[in-house]
Amino acid sequence: MIDLHTHTTCSDGTDSPFALVKKALATGVTTLAITDHDSTAGWSEAITALQPQIELVLGAEISCLTSDGISVHMLGLLFDGENAAIQQILADSRDTRIPRMRKMVELLRADGIDISLADVQAQTPAGATVGRPHLADALVRKGVVASRDEAFLNLLNNESKYYVTHAAPTPVEAIRAIHAAGGVAVIAHPFASRRGQIITSETFADLVAAGLNGIEVDHRDQNAEERKTLREIAQELNLVITGSSDYHGTGKLNAMAENTTLAAQWEALEAQADARRVVRV
Ligand code: AMP
Ligand code: ZN
Ligand code: FE
Ligand code: FE
Image 1: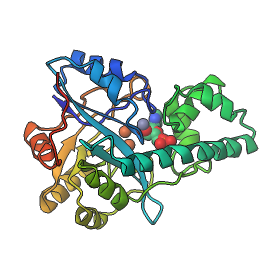
Image 2: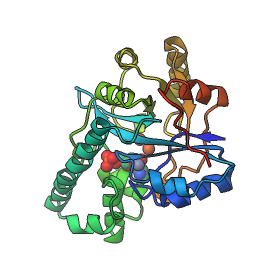
Image 3: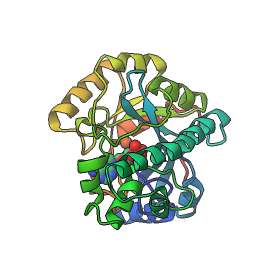
Image 4: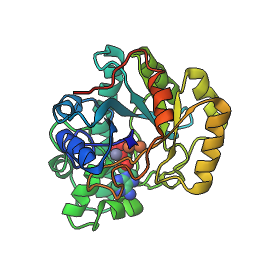
């Protein structure tokens, strides 16, 4: 079983990197990617949990914004973590998430919702990329909502008046940076319409021109029709097709390996990195 998209306490997941790998082992995953939002902080700990039955793909999910302001998530896999340019992009994104969070808190407060930046920080593990799920946890703690899901539904989704974006590279910039660092780029859940505005089919041509390697087709936020369209786009543009869980521990309903990638697709993807960087013990 191949699962190429998961999160840990280094962003908004609830399992530590060590626990993530143990969970994957218990689930029978044989190839696991660790893809925290805008961070590679979990890589070294995840490696310490490896067993011979599992191989680890080091990655990150880069938050991007198109020039039209549409949110796009780009999975960078198998890139060189020592590459300074990509680490700078990730660091810039993490930095701007703090003033962004302050703004979201201010908007909520202005509407009489009792929440502070300190409340959000109290829900953010040390060193983690701060995101809306931590704000959601703070709102749960304060009794404003009952769950992360309800927080997103009512207050924190991309269409909400409390939503604020943070500075981010464009998807094309992210693809270029991933490639310059020797890795491969897979666009995450591109048609996940329930998250807000999505990119058009035409945009794929630009991404392919920049070197996009794959499309995440099988993901719980994409329905059968959206997956069918994406599969057709991937076939037409000769892109790798992936499926993954986007596991977040108890932070989301997504179960480890609920969607997986076919071995032949994974092999085709891995072959496009500039070096063999899969980690095994
Ligand atoms: P941010 O990066 O701060 O914009 O937050 C985006 C994160 O929120 C992504 O990791 C999503 O997985 C997460 N998210 C979106 N909708 C929900 C939801 N309904 N419940 C929990 N997490 C969600
Ligand atoms: Zn997340
Ligand atoms: Fe995502
Ligand atoms: Fe994700």
